[in-house]
Length: 374
Image 1 (cartoon, rainbow, N blue to C red):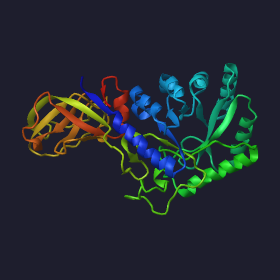
Image 2 (tube, rainbow, N blue to C red; image 1 turned 45 degrees about the horizontal axis):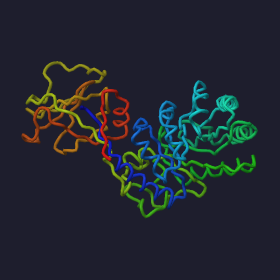
Image 3 (cartoon, rainbow, N blue to C red; image 1 turned 135 degrees about the vertical axis):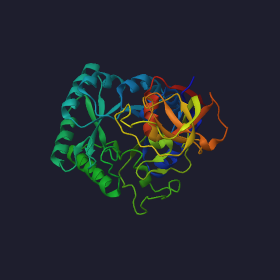
Image 4 (spheres, helix red, strand yellow; image 1 turned 30 degrees about the vertical axis):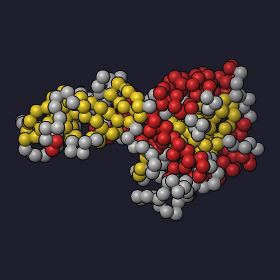
């Protein structure tokens, strides 16, 4: 059935191997793979569970973790919830999550009570905000950080597993040696204050991998040559780097990874020659935006059966470079096939590579089928 995603499990497996060589072999970091970009696709998770390089399998949604916690745990790996939990989730977290990220002590206290009911100890990772201004205790509030760490230390059913940071996702602040060194410094102060040895100091996501000094990760594009990962960072959380082969700090492709492991295939439902300019007064489209059109004369225009309800048009690239995306509505995407001569006919399939935003929408749309290459 179309439209559909083609997910190449073998290419994703190759990406895991390459990323492990960078993060584990050269960076001395444990490898946490984030599954939310493919909405916890179970075929992908089964592959990850078999890979010895993967230490943690993480997601932002408890529903996704519930779907695969047994698979991951049976393989000897840990599940991680990377979104700050809701109070309403704590019972399910204790049952299905091995490590959860936290920034609010009220939530940690609720987790402590829920874990006591289950007779277990729940690992938590305390998030520190280094300036990106998303989740975490602000790094300048050192007294609050140490106070919270001491309170967690005294809990019977919660273990302070470590600390972490998120960068680039909201404020677009790029990980650097300077800001990540603050995280290492905070970890040291927590250990000195509490007497605990933190198992994890998580230095961010796919935007941090460029800091690892590795001949497999050469300084390319806009990457600064004098930046490096500070000693003491021992974990990275990789989603887009795994799925699409991208470093997200400087928007560069990681060498020896596949950037086309996930593709969209959609079918042509109309193919006609029409003017490039709509006729009549231009108002706003179905999404409240006023479009702009360039007069290119008569064009060969194709409509494919997928739309803005399913994907992000700005995050799609036709594999056939002669094709141009003109725009779309909720159910349709309009393509310019003028340069393609007579290579396409009604019913043919157009293939696209996708960026992170487009991929994320496609995997959560119930109207997009999936097939796998293994």
